Image 1 (tube, rainbow, N blue to C red):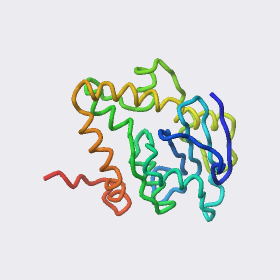
Image 2 (image 1 turned 45 degrees about the horizontal axis):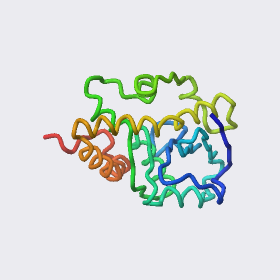
Image 3 (image 1 turned 30 degrees about the vertical axis):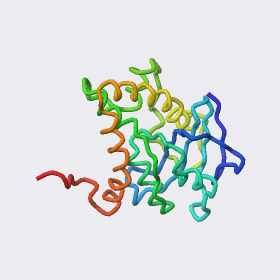
Length: 202
């Protein structure tokens, strides 16, 4: 795994292709309260790009160009959170989303373990550490934090491929795609106050 580190934006010359794995680190789990600290990206080639958000007043034009590009499919794990954070921070509406947690819940109905660590272990035989998950992402990042953050996007392309094969086999790929398209609306509900309410219940 290679790690490339930037501050406030991606380089203008960087081309990550049309399928990009993305993750975020924040100061907490409330998208409307806790600020964005880090955005991780990977094209699936073993290199992870970390963008440390130091100054929220500076718009990361190259990062936003990628996020707003509807031709680029963005792979997240639990997209509901990351998309909400990015939407709240930069007032953007990300399209063409793939969520490995949703895909796992639709494909792997034989288990209730759908965390990123679980998917890495079962589908890829990879063991990852989550020790740095709850650390302070607001200050200067340690080597361990950078490696942890990078690992969160390192395997998403391979996980997507494995899950897609199951979804196709079980005839649930169209259902998954419909759920991915709804994420934009689900994050609006989260940000407007319906984060813990299932409006579809009786």
